[in-house]
Image 1 (cartoon, rainbow, N blue to C red):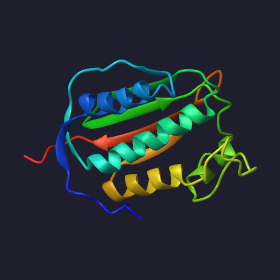
Image 2: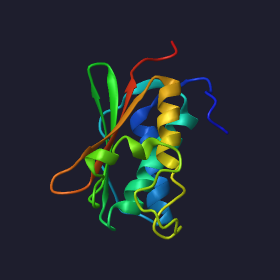
Image 3: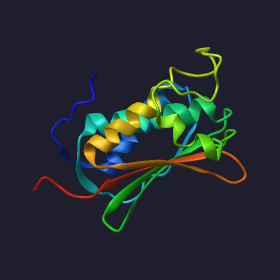
Length: 157
């Protein structure tokens, strides 16, 4: 439910992400390391992109071991690349694709205090596929995970 695409609108991705980070900082629930870069205007379904990025940030906060979460947005060869990095225990290589399946959780106790429902990454992937975006998870050294979302640049004009 709620995964249907909406009309894309031209937004400055730096300002868009800055607003998301401001919400986290205002709530006081997480320490986010975010340095806005250059402006980048792109046509996106803002509701879908917000949901993808907040799902990734929520996961990084939840599993990041109370360490700051790094968020970055860069452009490279006609693509905006969003990076959400944590310093948690990481995701074993054999589980990196499985965590995108609905209800799949690395932590199996089903306790709400140690994890969610197992839907966040499945929803993020479905939204990315619907919009032609790419999403993946990579390990960080010496520990943690980097979630990346690639969004093709373009405007409605």
